[in-house]
Picture 1 (cartoon, rainbow, N blue to C red):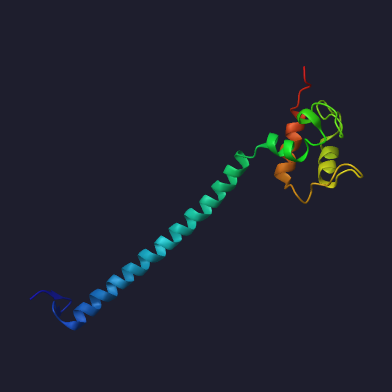
Picture 2 (picture 1 turned 90 degrees about the vertical axis):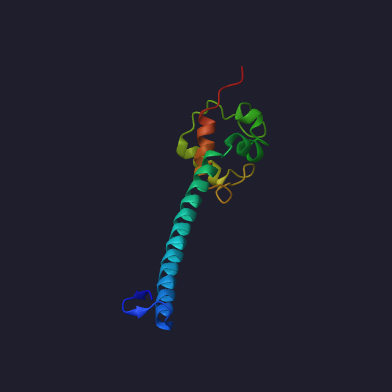
Length: 131
C-alpha cells in the first residue's frame, strides 16, 4: 500500500489531505490569475488611453468643432478669424478655446479635455497659409 506521511493511500484522511492541497493550490492559482488579470486590465486601460491619444485626429476634431467658423481648416477667415500665422499667445488661444468669445464663439472647456485643447493649439500653430 502507498503511504503518505504515515497514512495509507486509500484512507479517507489521505484523500481529504490531497483535496485540501488541491484546493490550496487552486486558490493560489485563482488568486494569481485574478492578480494577473487585474494587472493586464490596468495595462490595457493605459494602453487604450495611449491609443486614444495616438489616434486623436485633431484635423477631424477641428473640422467638426471649429471649422464651421474658421474656414479652410483655420487657414482663411470665415465667421471666425483666420488662425494660420496668428500672433496670439498660447495662453490666449487656450483661454479662447476654453471660455469662448461671446457672442460668436462658444466655450469648449466643458467639451474638450486639456489634451484635446493642446492638440488643437498645436494644430493651429502648425497651420500654413494657403498658397
